[in-house]
Amino acid sequence: MSEYLTLVAVLLLSVVGHNMTVVYAALIVLAVKFFEQLTGAPLLEFLGGHGLQLGIIILTAAILVPIANGTVTISTMINSFKSTAGLVALTAGLLAAVAGGAGVPLMQSNPNVIPALIVGTMAGVFFFKGIAVGPLIAAGFTYFVLALIEYFR
Image (cartoon, rainbow, N blue to C red; front, side):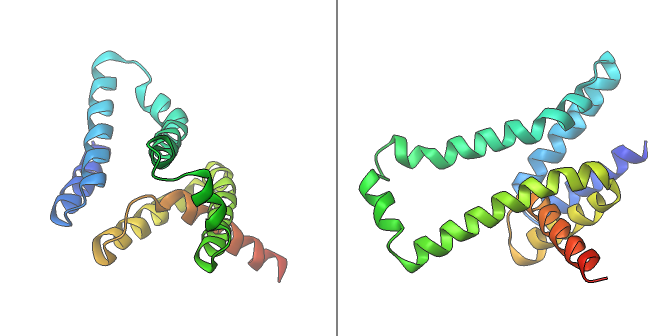
């Protein structure tokens, strides 16, 4: 029962904070949990195990749309590497991908960081008008910081 209360609290905070992404996510998880209890099907396990990969696929597909509709051409792509902003974006993309790759194993091996990642992401969304794509990358950055702390001990 406390899971429902926590999810409803996240839902209400998201409504108050006008973050529809988290509202939809909370509604989906609540619906999946409710449906799972009715049917006994391991839907939350499926969502937890495959949802991240499916979300990344959908996000990547959305990012590729400008290529598909011709807004971004090969010439545009080549020219982007000739600008400071393009090189910074290339570096940021590389670091974000590496951070996300390190974040998944961290969350699997150390699940006690997940609540802090969720609260931190929600705080970024609510107070700084961020977007709720942060937990995975935040987990990666957490991994890097913990690795640095361990290295310098």
